[in-house]
Image (cartoon, rainbow, N blue to C red):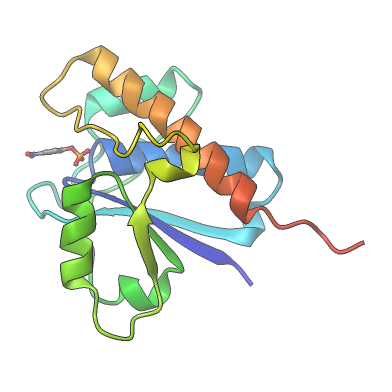
Length: 159
Ligand code: 4NP
């Protein structure tokens, strides 16, 4: 059984493709690629079909992560039945997801950052109107949260 994880932000060009790329890299490093299905999407539709923001691509590339192949898409109703975990980058994303979630849908919809374990860090701030440091901060937060997430979800083979 794979665990299906969807990362969500507003535009799906900065934060959520970064989190997707970071989580994919951590899962690959752990040799658990076949255990997970990983994707990202946005609550907004302005950037649908676009590659990730160049600044997000650059910040990820500095960590050896290539997110250039992603194409932005919007969250759809079927995601709430397909994915086990839908992880929002900020409180507005979380509210929008809860508003969209069909009754009886299976997905567990939550904030991403609490997986990092620091109660002071609730959200991944939107870097879109920021500078390179804000994109680096996005990557750092994605690492902190995705490391905690993988630790929690990691499947230990039966001995
Ligand atoms: P993201 O960043 O939600 O992390 O992908 C943004 C991308 C685009 C916009 C806002 C945030 N925008 O307003 O177009």
